[in-house]
Image: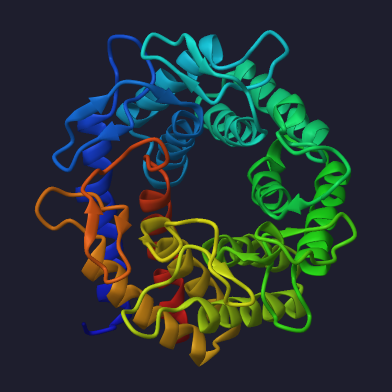
Length: 392
């Protein structure tokens, strides 16, 4: 493929506007009960009507972003409102914690067993409030955000299965998502609160989870940032690490911190060197730092979100540093992603391939895949490719 920047920008733009957004507009909205269907087969048919809070909130966020950043289309705001009102009515327990799953009618199915539902609620209602001007949505966003801050040191709360005190580990997922979430919330937060949370997340990710010896990000470390020789302690999640680095690049760019930008780019390149499948191509899902068998049996699958977040990170890194390694890796990951995940017949992208790159589930949405990683990455890559034309 010719890596001409205007042509690439057009590819990402057209795929988003003419392919991916229409897929979700047409197939996902539950006009009868509210919210969205996320369990969609290859053609967009609904195969399960349960509603997963992560994906419900992510779709509210996504259509609010379309309205705020692309075009103030009333249809997009209507779809965002349709999800926001359903979630505001059904999404939380009596203590204000967000459930994990509801049935179609909005009755709770799965308890609020971790804090990530609250994270995505804060993101969603922040952007919906910006789009709609609804003051109640601001209140929901701030309540969810402060829930996250309150629970960040014990994100599963009473639902934590680990026996206390024997093997204490913290996960990178919490500070990495707080980094992105806090930037999403910047218009609702005081400057002091914003900078305090950003300082903490950057420090924790880059000092506790980033290993100075290998240049890789560990998924779990002890509370003081040291490593444990066990399944969880050896775990590397390449997609998470790379996604975390573009979150931190956004913070660094906001602060004109070139040292942090370059440190993040170095980390992305280290992860790709470690996590790229040199035989079949693509990025592994899970890896063990010592090369032992991972406990996740799906460790060698190739997932859509891992590759899409990598494309975003590489373009951001290239535009901020002009390092040729970023562009070389972008070309490689771009070719792999469009070859294996893009569905040229029915639209949207497949989510799950085996190690060889063959599609193993032809769903377009499910319990974990919804209207989020594909459209977000297409939009961000399109914007970065437009920006990149300034450097040619």
